[in-house]
Amino acid sequence: MLDARTRALLEDLRGWKVEDDDHEYLFAADEWHLDAAELNFPQLVLDRSFHFFSLIEDDLPVEVTQRRPVANWYAERDGYIALGIQLIAFVLSDIACLTIRLSHRESRIRNIYFYKRPPMRVSPLLTHEPVRFTSYLYIPESIERHSFYSSDVAQSELHDKELLATGFSWSNQVQNHEQTATPDSLVIATTPQRLADLGALLIDFGRDETEADEITMESALDGAGGVAHGSVEQRFWLPGSMAFPEPSLDALSLPPA
Image (cartoon, rainbow, N blue to C red; front, side, top):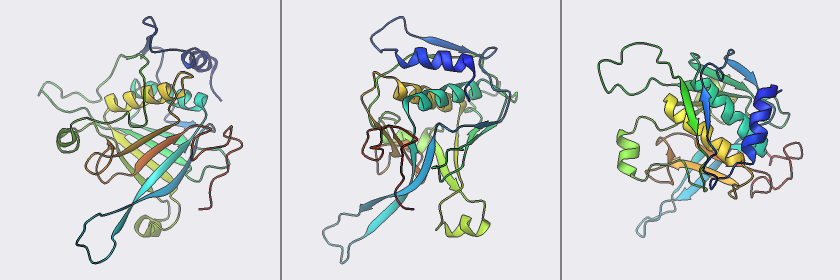
């Protein structure tokens, strides 16, 4: 359940528009920080699928098809905004890893682990741990299907340490190697700045003004960008989208595993 303050902010943010210059919100650490490292979140469903693509070469003797694992996120607008708020509050706290328990009956993946990596060391003066952040300024932005990427592919993949590193995990150690069953958990690791940006993206995705009903994150080396090469791709869906045609989360029916 969301507390009254989060619910009030969620309802306000949902109606914000990019064109309104006075719309900005300062998340202050003394007001927005998490006291618990684990949250129950029934407003989100996660499932695994695969992205198949072929290597197109004229002289190949056989067809070569590759597949990439994908984490599919299903939530209503309020769910994405609520999760975005919690992510920003997590960044402003001293908690190193946030566990989200997905309690919706339809969710096949039951846990998300958000892990804060230390910021890049740009000076020997940055030696104290943990690094603390005092605030995060949210300003609404327009988003499209591929909104969470670097325009410079080489810089994004080879030098940028703030990419999302994402992976699946299985509680069964045999499955951690075979990976034939649906995973239990999704792990997302990146810097506090990028986690806060992800929170802002989810808030933007949930606003009524946003027309996009899908966000996709892929490797920038052979996809649209958004996650580190070799990571699990991420796809976020709203009701009425191609993969989430139902009108609400409670009406969602996932395809056979």
